[in-house]
Image (cartoon, one colour):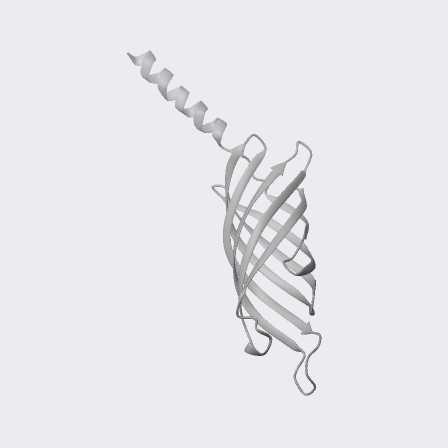
Length: 164
């Protein structure tokens, strides 16, 4: 009976260790994409604990009617999907500043506002220190009504990161 209990316990431990994944302590790279133009972000991820991490992004945006920069911070939960594939979800927010084109004379052509964001994506971690990701980040901006920033923005991005 003692051997059966120990064998079952050992089996459960092996099963849980197989399901756990290693998240790199740090990852730095680029995230490319946007919802209405082109954007590039320098992104940094830092492992916290228990398959959780934070991500910080500093980016530049060039849209159909605007140009600007963006700072974002996200808290993410990471789960094993299969082998080296993970999926993740997170929440966060940030600050954005834009200069707008085609503004009527006499109006300010710039705006700065805050936003809240969600994040969901998949990633693949190679045997070398390379991480590729694809994510979807809906964002809601809160700023001036003059440029209609109080709406939902769907940001899709591809990421390439070096893990260390």
